[in-house]
Structure formats: structure tokens, C-alpha cells
Amino acid sequence: MSKILIVGGTGMLGEPVARQLKRDGFSVKIMSRNPEKAAKQLGAGFEFVAGDVQNLESLREVLGDCEGVHVNLAGGPTPADYDRIEHCGTANVAKAAAEMGVNRISYLSGFSVCQENSHHYATKAKYDAENAIKASGVSYTIFRASWFMESFPLFIQGKRAMIIGNQRTPLHWMAAADYACMVSNSFRLPAAANQTFYVGGPEAVSMTDAVTQYCQLVRPDVKVSRIPVWLFSLLTALSRDEGMKDIGRFMAYSAQITETGSFETANAMLGLPTTTLQDWFQTQMSNQQAQPVLA
Image (cartoon, rainbow, N blue to C red; front, side):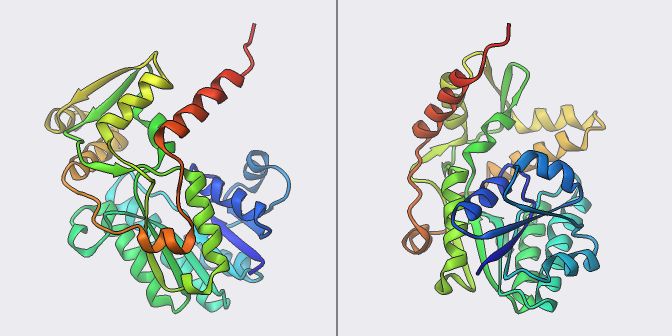
């Protein structure tokens, strides 16, 4: 394959994939509702086009010269938004890809996505998106990924990191760079077609312990706080902030689920993720030290 369209290529997890595909010799097209802003963020070496996952015609236009497409969409905060963006948006991409003769579609899903967990609306949106991709007839590669290390800063508001609920389940935290390599490799391997891969990092650490370690090493200025789900939900119920309500519902769900899939197939076929939490923390500390000090 030579040209890959990235849907969501400027996001926290989409940008590393775009850059890795480019490094590996693919021609990379970035679809954005604001191509100028995307070009400023990613720089030279990419093709930037306007498009919207809710507009089938725009999807047909941008997919016309592409052999593959990678979908990295983030919905929310309301259940309707998750369905509209993650499910229906992905379904539109898959439909347009089938119509335009695209050879492969890859999709970032989540490690807990399955029919049994579809009682949670965000999981249901991803599960429905997976099924729409499979029903399209386009060869697919689905990544059911564990938590990403790049999400650690999202736990911090001001000078406080908040852990909501009893988050003690071991999680295989994954570096986006390792994941990006796996996605890129999948586009070069015929054997990766029509596969659903569980992917995660080399070590299992609970959310509570991982966030605490991150703050101790990378953000020592931040205090880690813990709050029960019921109390957080009570506080957000009085707010009009749908994003905070969504976080509370997700953390209640997160405290109840575990990783059940095996990483063996993905690791053997797509390459072994090697970045540990300590590796990633060290990189963040080095990056901080390299930042210029403003007078």
C-alpha cells in the first residue's frame, strides 16, 4: 500500500500513527475539518484535505486515491455524541471505503469492547463501530488497546491529579509510539487483514499506582487525590458540565472491568511493544529539561 488516509490524525493517538506511517514510507493524507490548522501542527510531508465523518460525499472524495484508511475518533461527552461520532462516523468511513475500493481499514478500539460490556454507552459505540467495519466488506484490522501512557496528563487539573474510584485493576499501559509501529506494520502484512488484535505494553500496573508514579517522577508539583465514584458523581450531578459527568460514569465502569484478551498474536505478528512506564517517564523528564527557560 502507498497512500493511507488518517481520520483523526491530529489527535493524541492519531498523530503518532501519521508520523510513523510517513517514516515507514507511506504517503499519508490527513483529513481534518480544519486542514490549515492540521498542517501547522504536523508540518511538511503530509497531504491535508478537508472532510467530515458525518458527510459521506466528502469521505468519498478524500478516499478516492487511498489504498488504506486508519480511523482514530474520539466521541463524547454525551451518549448521543459517542454514537454519532464513534459509531456513525466510523460506519460512514467504512461505507465510503467500500464504495471507493479501499483495501484496508484499521480502527482504534478499546480492550474492554465486547457485547457483554455494551451496557456502557462509549463501549457500545465502539462495539457498533467494529461491527460496521466488519459488515462493510473491506479488509480490516481492529486494535483493542489498553490504556495509553499519553493519557497521564489528562488526570491533572491545575496542581491536582484525581483518581476516581477504586482503580486497582492491573493495566498494560502502552506507549503511543509502540502502538503506531504496530499500526504501520499491519498495513504491510496481508496476514493482518480481518484481525482483531488486543494490544498493550510490557508490564501491568494499576491506574492508581501508575498515575501516582507519573506525578512523583514527572510532575512532583502535583498532589494526587482520591475520591469515591459516588461522591464524584454526586458533585457532578449538580453541574452542567457533561464532560465531568462522562468522566464519572467512565471511571465507575473502569473500576469494574479487567483486561481479558491476549496480546500474543499481535506481539508476534506486529512487533513487541517494549516501552516501560519508567522508559516513558524518563523521556518526559528529559523533554522537560530540554524546554527553554523564559526570562
